[in-house]
Length: 172
Image: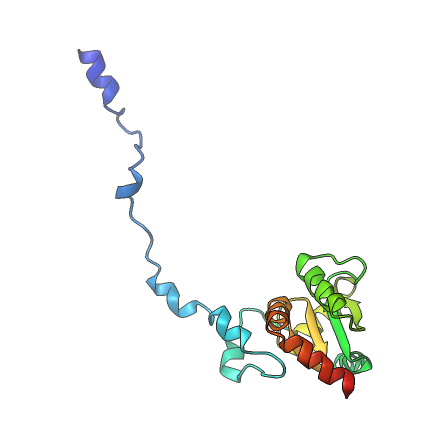
């Protein structure tokens, strides 16, 4: 009987894991003030709606100031075609699913568009993030103005807004 009693008790000095139901969870309340705005709020920031300075200062990412040469180059590229897509890869060989999705949408609408591969040039990639105030790729520009990324483009395509915007751009 003594052997069975010691087998049921843990050895002195060994840790016994607590059941999941009795473990304490770390407090998350203190982190709530550090959470960035909800994605729905960011979706409203499209086509020239820039972040206000207080919101911009909350950004975790710190980008170097864009050179005047880079800004002039991007202005020239964005204005060179009615529809410009800055993406990972090329329209014939996209390097990410989001870029592929936007390419497929533009092709389905039979609209001519130019693409630039942001993976080929780190300075271009970083400069575009500041130029558009948008941290991710792809970035779609229509008629010289930033339209949005993949999620916004998909949403606008489903609602018909993208088709209307492209029609207006092609006619201007």
